[in-house]
Image (cartoon, rainbow, N blue to C red; front, side, top):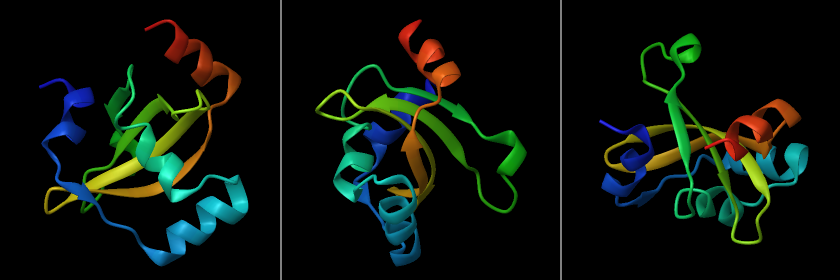
Length: 100
């Protein structure tokens, strides 16, 4: 299975109020921008083996509608994408993303 196709099988998003606040205040990323990366191409996704405990977590590199490159950590619950964290890509992540 191509992990980049995983979000396409989901029916929407689920938001935790704390994560909405954290992403907005700490990283200046809105919920709308977090969601946009899942609809724009390319989307680079991988399992987050290090942080997957009781629940599988995934890492994603993508871009907003305006082209802003974002890194996101998310999980999937009941066919809904639940964004855990989102921030601007680091230089290293941006190079990896641009090489796809």
